[in-house]
Amino acid sequence: MTIFYLDTSALVKRYKTEEGSDIIDNLYDNLPKGHSMATSFLTVLEFVSAIRRLLKGNRISQDDDELMKAGKRENLEVINPRNDVDRRKMIEMLR
Image 1 (cartoon, rainbow, N blue to C red):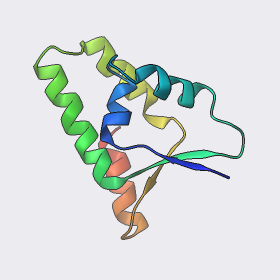
Image 2: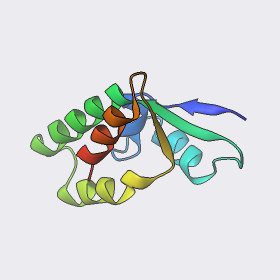
Image 3: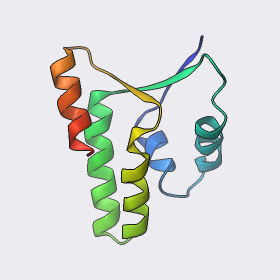
């Protein structure tokens, strides 16, 4: 089993078309059975901040933001080095 670790820039590529977006989309759309994707809970914070900056700068539209919210439940495990309580708080931020 392979775990694909996604950093902030990889996650942003899912919602803002830029170089490498096709690779990330392909990974999401064709994740081999038995494999998974993961990220750090700190990446979740960075991702939310990056998306907010893109919205404020009109670099993504409100429609893209809605798409991001709709996709928040995609199969991405949040790795938390501390405990499950903190992990649930980070996931709640995206709701």
